[in-house]
Image (cartoon, rainbow, N blue to C red; front, side):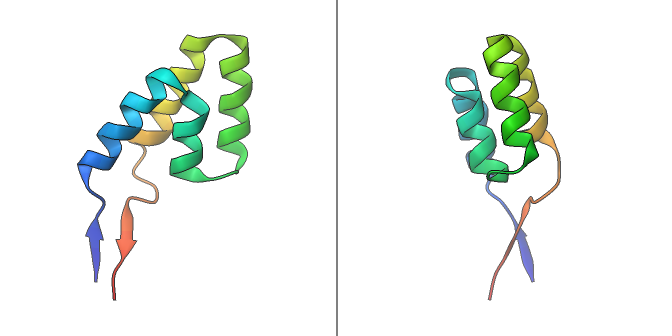
Length: 68
């Protein structure tokens, strides 16, 4: 049975995205393409990096944790 990930974790990621957008994307998705896209967007401008990080965090993908 799966349970929802704590919304506190997502709130933490949203706040972290304001300071370090690539780190919050890494913590949500790992070293996948989303991280590299966010890193490039952050280098191009801080605001595009933050908006992309918020988009990645808000997606419903990978929001369930497998419990034993």
